[in-house]
Amino acid sequence: MVPLYQQIKQALRDEIDGGRFDPAEPFVTQREVCERFGVSSITAVRALNDLVADGVLIRRRGVGTFVAPSRRRDPNPGTIACIVNALHGLRGAHLASILTAAEEICADQGYQLFLQNSAESTEREEVALRRALNLGVDGILLYPVQGRSASDVYAEAGRRQVPLVMIDRYRPDVPTDAVVADNVDLGLRITDRLIGIGHQRIATLWGETECTSVTDRHAGHLQSLRRAGLPVRPDLVALRPYEPLEEKRRLAMLSGLLRSAEPPTVLLCANGYVLAIVAHDLARLGRRIPDDIQLACMDDSGPYETLPLAAEAVLPSAELGRRATELLIERITQKASGPPQQVVLPVQVREARTTSL
Image (tube, rainbow, N blue to C red; front, side):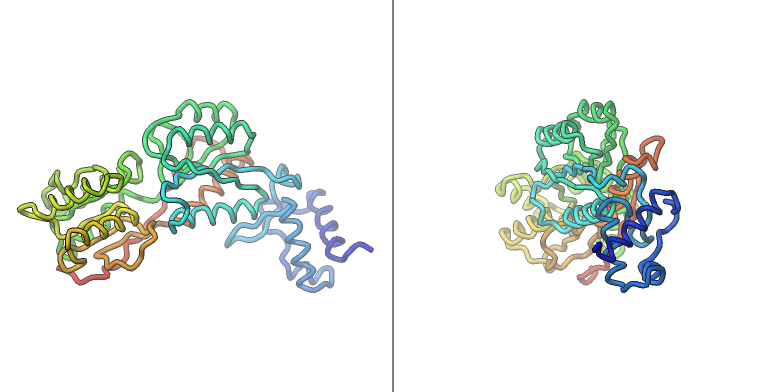
């Protein structure tokens, strides 16, 4: 005897294949299945979950369940490659939230997601992109390395009509979709906050320096200084790497800043990893936080959350992953057409966790 949930599943699938349901309208709910077929919620949920697993239905968070586009009715799922730039591994909250959201959307809409790590290497990124294309993936999510490389691979993806969406940062030289945080506004608002609590000498310390998430934050920082009528001191605002340097060079750079005639009152770090290294280096120099020098951070991506901070920005990490994956699937299913889109998401700046000057 065919189990009851299988009978319901088949009846619903026959109606879907017959065109009874509009893909643009929400599908029948669990309660409606219970009432129509006179079954328990457990049986209704199992039937609906099976239709989702088969790619017949898709779930959109906060919206509901819908009939999947016709190509997703194939029980064999499509494949999306996700290539990330995770030099510090996958332990950071920012990247983990992006990946979790992307995986959830892929699972809901019947796609398999396979992950590759470029680890800050342009060569590894190019190899990963070529591998994805050679495997015949339906689309590519890319958290790109800094710099400008592998442009021929992007051109090849275009020739093969494989959609690609960048996450977190975009490539000015590559016309493709991207979902990013509003990093210009981030740099502006966090600097405004520091100025508002009394800081007039703000030193910036960076990790990567050749990606748009950083250059946009730097532009926002400079805009805030100029708007406040503060001097733009090259020794404080230089866009130069700090985190990648060996410890001896880092300590020399930091010591030079702190011993200058007009030293900074706060160190504004590019991200949580730079923040953690700066805190370590300050301890090596015998400087106390926040008594001797205050710290602020341009995102919450690092593994450390216990340091007292003058200000901290909060990235829309999960939303970046969700919106990028949804946009990619819309490109795959041709629901989104036209020129490349750049989706810009707002950021938040947390209240100070230290006293003002």
